[in-house]
Each structure stands twice: as C-alpha cells, then as structure tokens.
Amino acid sequence: MYGVFATGLLLSSRSASRIPGILLSAGTAGLFFFWRRHLWNIFGNFYQAAMEQDLSDIGKHYGSEPSAFWVAEVATGSETGTVIGCVGLDASTTQDSTTVEIRRMVVSPKYQRHGVGSLLLTTAIEHARSHEL
Image (cartoon, rainbow, N blue to C red; front, side):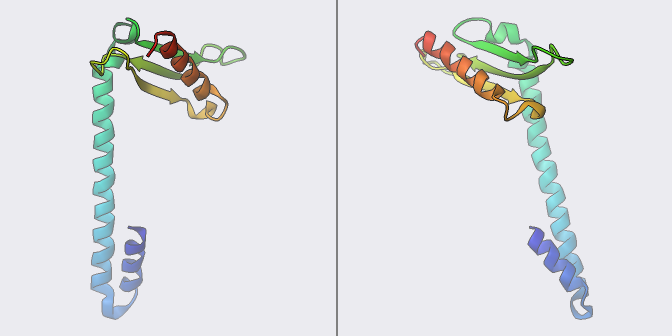
C-alpha cells in the first residue's frame, strides 16, 4: 500500500500525470484510513465483548474448577502490587470436560521478555495437568 501511495506522489510531481497521481495518492490514503478504522472497530468489538463476558466478573467466570485465573504482580520495590500480567484457563468454551482454553494471556510491555509470560503459562499448564486436562 505504501508503494502505491509513493507511486502516486511520484506521478503527481510530473505535470503530464499530476491528476492521476493525486487521485492514486488520495485513494490509497483513503483506503488506508478506512482499513485502520475497520481494524479499530474490530478491536473495539472484541474489547467490549470481553468486558461484558468473562472479564465483567472474573471470580464468577473463572472461580469454579477446572477454570482458573492468575494475576502476576510486582513483589518488591517501588512498584510492589502493580499488576503486570494475567492468564486464564476457561473450561466453559467447550463441552469436552478434559479440555480448557487459555484466555486473556497478557503481560505489560514494560515487563515483557523478563519471564513473566513463561511463568504465567507454566502455572496454567501445571494446573491443567493436575486436573488431568
């Protein structure tokens, strides 16, 4: 898409192809804008659904085994108690009683690449294995 936009700019700099170049650049910019807006709407719908479903009451949704939800937080220093990640195991997404789904796995960007995600995932896997899932 960037290449098409750049081609339009190049064409618009020449007098013989100015109008097609401007139209190509404007069309590409418009397409880019609407595509980004579409993606933002998809994300917004996903976020809204999450907030209305399992994240509206984490204790109720993940509180009955084998479902579970873990939160990682800073244990020492000036940021003690700051939530830096979470992961959930959800048994309600399938009829198979031996299957759970990993949900809501996230680590704060500041703490990524420090083993937090691995620790959360390991904890979830150990829980699943202990329940023979």
